[in-house]
Image (cartoon, rainbow, N blue to C red):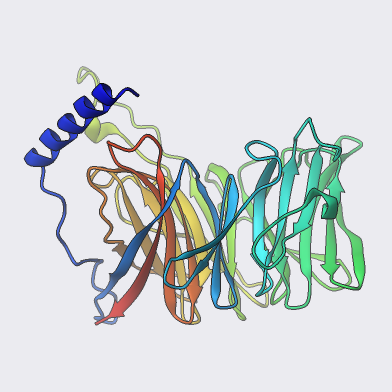
Length: 401
């Protein structure tokens, strides 16, 4: 853009700001919970990382550091949001696409799709382990499958567990590869004869190996695998509902929370009323189902949020007392990020909108991590005068007042 063009754009933005005052709230509270408590999210600080044009993918805890993984690089940050190191993803942009990541407390392990045509490494799906500052090297890639398929990884306390599916004879075969430093790779077949239309979701390595999947008919299943490899299924988590996208998974020592999105109902305007307008719009509905450690499925999935305009679940974590679900709600006041608190009875307790400087910006993706009861939020936001979105790291607290 020319200097003249930038000046015109800046004047237009200043005119917009003069007509619209940005929000001033110190926090944004959700509804009163059943026990009378009124929690809220407090913003401790929000800092721009001075990284443009990158989309958040994962936010991991690595000892006293944070690892922010985007579509282009891994960023090592301290707990005050200061950048310590940036490690570009190999073949970036477009070479390595990280599909899942987990931390061992030092670096991280990731499953990724590799498609760099100029590399000596063949295309396919790989497991990769970073060094302490987040660098990945193609020389250390461990091939999971020759096709650019779906794979998921988690840390089980001693090694990385990567689950992946490969087409075999018109069906999918699900395998688990366990990577332990100094002990090689332990590979085993978990399950075969699965439909090619099966969608793999989140994986948890503890307290038991578990994987959520979306079945061809749209139902959601939690698949648990014993040490022998025998599967134990908790199906019909979204019975008679059409789900869209993939499912997500979070785990405590006593339960799993499976998150998924139910397709929006089609609303038909009344005869003769013409276009229903904005009030006729409907959005996909985020929901969750809790499954106990002994495989009991609680009676019905809970709608995760009563907020309007929620379109996707960004991430889910267990904070030691409750599940926290990060939601993206473009239909709420022009776009907001929100936390939904879910207890271990599978009940959605309250919605908490996160107090960021949303206006006049445009939100991108976001991720959440927990460090010693402190919440960290990685997100992208683009202001009208920015050519590309900028990364932010914010520190949050849930105030139980």
